[in-house]
Length: 171
Image (cartoon, rainbow, N blue to C red; front, side, top):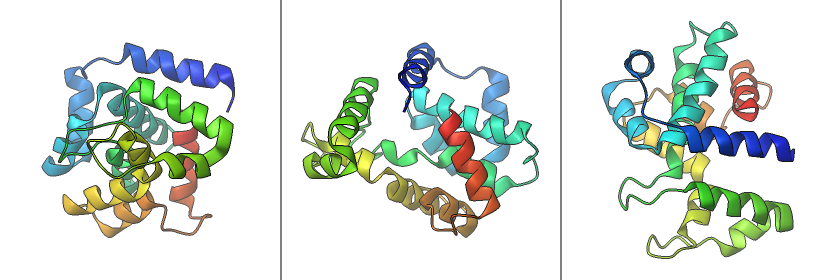
């Protein structure tokens, strides 16, 4: 990843604030009540990231694909543990990027600990966030298509998955 891209991401995350009423309403029109509850429990920077992904898809002609728009808003739910309340902070994200640069994903998997009391738990959340996001989405009544898109359990050339990955990578 480009350093400028990561710096831009960090600046956007630092500037993240609670949604205004129009942004909140947009999200609530796409998500069901339980999905929205999980979404709005995410840190502001995660909410804004997912919102930008969703808006990018919306602006590029995917207004009618509600499953894709829901997947865009829910794809990072697993970066927060609703049971323990632990989540990947901005500073943890910086560590994640640094560890990936040093040793790739294998290093993250090596240091990750599934114990919420451990400071290494955030790496566990990061390494398993796609699967956890899908499980959380499913638990709040998301359609199987939404769950599959969030989990990445669709063919790599699935047009909706390609679009989701494109928008996620751009934000």
